[in-house]
Image (tube, rainbow, N blue to C red):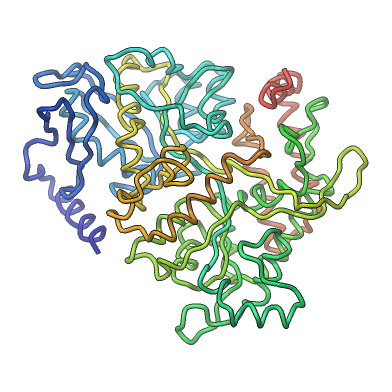
Length: 536
């Protein structure tokens, strides 16, 4: 209820065009620390002495008279990714003297709008919240400013890069240079109802029905399928109605394709930096390999044990179904684990299980062109998603101002506030985000924000295992990534809705990707792709 009342009060103030009742958002403390009050009255963040740099301080407003405009995902004052920028804006403006304009862009339109601004040279945006798959277009096009030149400048906020898993650090860098500042960490893990899967009566019944033990967490996708089938149609939340074994969010142009990407990886990737998208020698797509096709067939079979409407559901609709206790499984981003903790949104707090995505016992071997058995199961981590974070436009006349904003959000103090809130859409990924024994973050600080102690241990273990996994999916960040992904998304939707077979959908994707590669320049695309795999 606290979050609901907070949102209503903020919206009322904005609707009436009133200034907040309190005049200051910044307190300079005697020990040199700085406390900022966020847009909503009951939240503050205290920065350690020097953490915000020496450009700001009592009587100092280094960017007075300057204005910057940045983009973010649509979501509003309390929305995922957008909300934290609104929250920090009043204090940041007071500290720096600058004015911050925030432009929200719907997810499917964000890259095209930003890229058009850069290509046309209009420069209406000084900075942007980007997805990691934009890098090939933005960096290779010389459209963004590297940020590592600021790292040793004591005037700017300091942020800790020591906790980056290599899998995530790759998403913030290009060619050995940093172009992004820490914000979000995206990857998909398996969430499940811990209370149901560990129930002795359920386990005994499952053993009798299937002839095998119900292992928690499920080690393979076949185990997930078997358990989902077994639980499908049962009343999982006590409301007297039948529920689902699994829930997915499969809506086209709403990130539904990422289910396929995350699930397919262990079917085809068995060694570090193994290609998942293209043959690095020819730049021919391998998206329609027998391993990819089998993965899509499996995903469609698994989806049969979810609600029929999920083919048209976006993230929020799929998440809410799981949060209300209506499905045994969902695999998705870190938002799910944190949203479970919000009573207004969730009925399953204290009942959450989480693990790295399961593996498979048969993988497609590209060398032999056959499926081969493996033991133990092949498990692969992922950084599937956007890992939304800030970048600086090369067209801005105020790169220092933009960096100061993004670096403020990247500080340890603000980043920890972000990942503890539950609603911000900013997910944990740094070693210092995780509670012991998986990191060195304060468990008490999470508990003070209403987290359940058992849930958080499950959640942080899953993400530590995922980001630090020996094998991890290579992220597609070459130029045209948005176009490649969009065609895959549309064709997957046709397969999931029964309009095409899995083979037809991926063969069509193959053909469309070939056309895109030829138009963008096959030799250039191949060189950039090989570099992204560490081959050159």
